[in-house]
Image (cartoon, rainbow, N blue to C red):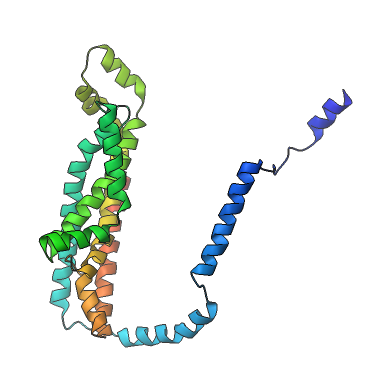
Length: 267
């Protein structure tokens, strides 16, 4: 009896020793981190030696040069257009694909696994690789960048749309099913309205992501302001480069602020 009361008075254990399998997993993870730190050649000394060069480049960037401001504005607007069009087309394609990738709403398990594999593949390949593929396929310019953003958006939205539909409350769906509603009726009358806040979040985050990505895609010739930045840096025109960087910052900042306002009002 005393042992029973003594066990009640003792504080619960704070740390439990893992079983052998978990212990070796943790150990392998720690060794991986240590090995990664070693292989990436982290060197505070090299960083300290590089700081004066960073300061020199920043000095050469100031003040920004506005000699080619018209070209910078046009390229910035082209970047925004690439992000908008690529995102919208990607969303339009990802929605029906996400229905197939939803375990609850897919018409057949084979379609479910096929859609899941396709979405995983589209998400796994980086958008800059898609840009290189489309540049080779359709040539230089914003069309290649728009296609790359479209494919990346399909992979991104397809997954989160499917997960949002799977998390919708099942009771309203079962009620409609009991009165003879079809699968399409259930999806559009119950699933989509209930998952709409999650859809909105995903769409807005996707637009922000696409805006940032469209800047990088220009570095490989896929249109937008990225190519302007690459040319300026290659020609050591740092004052023009600082103007381009400022334009990129303003573009991304404005898109993120508008996205935040829309998200707060809708959700």
